Structure formats: structure tokens, C-alpha cells
Image (cartoon, rainbow, N blue to C red; front, side, top):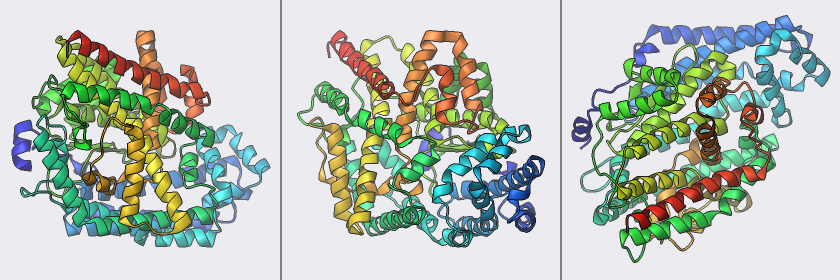
Length: 598
């Protein structure tokens, strides 16, 4: 099945070239890099542990540069192990190699925990003296950010112990989860999850219903493993939060995102207060599809006028690059490198991780993008999304390893913006109001998935984390009850959720990989809607400011980096402006339906 699909789309040979990092898992350079990291970590600890307060700015700069160099070398090996595993999770050798690297990274990291502890606990007078010195200006934000964790750090012995145990803790269970999902096959044709999920976007309702049944049956076969894994991750986070004195389950994520709690609360409250937009759209869709009842597997059904064609890989490439080029030649040139230099893995293959991602690797190397390309217009937008991430990562690499990593809330900026550029270009090629309606409706649903659905999933996370802390482990039915409740609140009376839908929480890996992450999608989407509006107003003067935003990486906090755009994240009305843009898109869909007499 996968082979036929890849031949149809022309994606069969779109394989990334990991040799840019290492020849293979047996490359001698891997051991050399690991040996360097081990010896350097020991040397740094021996020289600097217990002596940070004695260093002047020049000496402190030397230490930070050594730490950055070590971290980058270790990051390169770790990235290679992960990327190698991502396309062959059914290969025991790839899994063993990944686990080996995780254990080595843990051993190395534990030798360096002294740095963050001593730096966070330096007296303010000494820390400010160093931060104010021009010699450390490049690392000022990075160092200042580390000190915000001071109330949540443990003793060095405890931190070293946690680092030592980490390879067999939560990450090990997440590995199991990923392996089980990658191995799982669905229905009589033994299809991959990607192939089954694709059917939920098909016009034929019987195909959608069958896909729903196949996915549900497959998930139920592994529900015991999924439930146990979720409970382990919930307990792991509960224990760590208790040890680190985080007041709420979401607090550590807010701190990592450099956001104030009230900003995140404003985002969540604003989105949940506008679930009426979701209800309004799906009631329209139910009428346009001619259904008496819109069921969960009908949500992504295309309207009859949406062009149903298979987009080849080469066509998708041209669509994305042309859209990027109209906005910025610089951004298009960077995106083109991913195709030219084989930084993309596109075909659907057994054992390959589902979904899509862009991995930054390290600034001294380059990012890689993984997609599962099936030839839909939705896949074209996904390609634009991940290439947006990739371009962002290339631009931010100029800041170096410690400053390149962008907070998760801003990490979605370039990806969602890239999607919007492609959407507008494709929309402008359509003349028939009915086709415009079909394509606009598909985009609205994509935005819903990023804003409303992610916040609804945040509400699910909030429920299960708090339940675990109050009442202990959750049964499968309890997970399902919270899932159905938080999802139904979003749809109100517009969509009926079937019994099959009850277990669909169990395959969403974000809940495990990065607890609390999902609200970042809504943050990014609403931010991009505002930025895109500014682009339409400002024209050619906008792209240079936008590129500077991407280049800043993690060298500034979100509040500071958005100041040039006049955006105040502390203003609750900011979120409602973005939501109003979504409401206007729903109004446009209603107007197109009238125009087309649908």
C-alpha cells in the first residue's frame, strides 16, 4: 500500500541524507565525539565546580563557550540517533542505538549539573556584575533565563541522580509508546495510521466511517499499554513538579516558554469563550454536506466542491517555494536547500514515525524535515509548515547553540506563517465560488485544529494531570470521559461524538513527549493571524522585520521580540483580535455559500 502511494506521488526517493552528520551508527566519529564529551565534561567539572563565584567575566565567558561547544557536539550525536530511529522504529538496532546515546547523554549531563545550580544560586550582585559586562553580552539572555529556575532547582546530588535515572524513566516509556504506534497496523489491509487517518478526509462517508472503526479497533488492541504509559508520564511529572515546587502542572511549561501565567490563562480563557465560532462553522458544514447529523468522522470531510486531486511531490515543492519566493527571496532560497541537499524524508514507509516534524539538529550542521506525503492539498500545507520551521531554525542558527532554541510559543510562528502564504496563493488561483468555499472551509478547519482543538486538548491535559494528583491512576474509561467532555464542550451541539471516538486520546503523542505543549499551537496560530494582517497592511516593509524576528531565535523573550510589531501579549484583547479574524473567515464561508447558492 505504501509503495503504491509513494509511486503515485513521486515521493519514493525523497530520502534525507543523514550522512551529513555521520556515515552510519557505526561511524568511528560518533565514539570520538562521545569520548570528547565525556572527557570535556569531567575536565569542566574538575576545573570549575565550586568556583563560579570566583570567576571574572573573561573566565566566565571561556566556561560558557566550552559548555556550548560540548553541548553542540552531544546534541549532534543525539539528533542523529533520533533521526535514524524516526524512519526505522521497527529496527531493534536503531532502537538500541538511540537508547545507548540517551544513556551516554545522561552520564555526560550529570557531570555538568553543577553549572546551572551554582549560577542560579550566585548572589544577585555577583550575577548582575557578570551579566552587565560587555564580554558576556552575547549570552546575556541565556544566562539570565537560567536564573529564573532558581526556586525549582534541587541539590547537586539530587540533580545528578535524576540525570542518571532519566534514560530509564519517562523517556523510556515514550520510546515504547512510539514503537507500538509505529508497529501498529489497522484493518484487514494492515494499513499504517497515516493511511487510515487520510481516509477521514475522503468525500465518501462510508470510507470515513470505516477508517474510524479501523483506527478505534487498532487503538483498543494496545489500550492497556497506552493507558499505563500515560499514567507513568502523569506520575513522573507529578513527582518532579512536587520535588521542584512547581505550583501547577502547567507551571514548568509556562516558565520554559518564558510566559507569565496570566498570559497563558488569558489565551485559554479567550479561546474557550469563543467555542461559538466552532459551533457556527460546523452547523454550516452540516447543512452544506446535506447531513441530518454531523458525526466526529465527518469533521474533516471535504465539501463537494473542494478539488480532489493528487498533488505530486514536485508540484508540492514548486507551490511551496513559489509562495515563499513571493514573500521573501531569502526565505525561498533557504527552503530550496532542503530539497537540493536532501534534508527531507517524505515517503510513507513501514516503521516510520507518523505525522511530521522539523528537527534543528545543531547550528554547525543543519535541520532535517520529516513528512508523510500522501499527495493531498493538506499535505502541501504540512510541507510548508515544516519548511517554515526549517527556515526558522536555519536563520536562528546564527545565534549559536545556546541562543538558537526558540520558545515553543514562538517556534510555531514561521511554520504557521508558511502555511498561510501557501493557502492564500492556492486560493487566489481558484475562480469558482464553490471551489473557493471548499478550500476556505478546509483552511478554517485547519485553523480550528490549531487553535480550538489544541486548547480543548489542553483542557483534557489539565483534567488528567489534576486527577492523577488528586485521586491516583486513571482507568481507560476515566481518560475517555475527560476526553469526550472536553471535546464536546468545543463542538457544543454541532458535532455528535460517537463511542469510537472515546479512545482517540490514546494516540496523541504530544501529551507524552512534551506535557503542556499543545497551547503553544494556539498561541502561534493567533499570533500569526495578527502578523499576517500586518503583512497585508505594510507590504514590502514587513518581511525584513519578520526575518529579524526569526533570526532572534531564543536570544530574547516573547514579549521583547514582538515589540517591533506593536504586539502586547499582556493585553487580553490581543487574543480576541486573532479570534475575530477566524470569525471573519467563517463569515466569508457563509457569504461564499450564499454566492454559490449552496
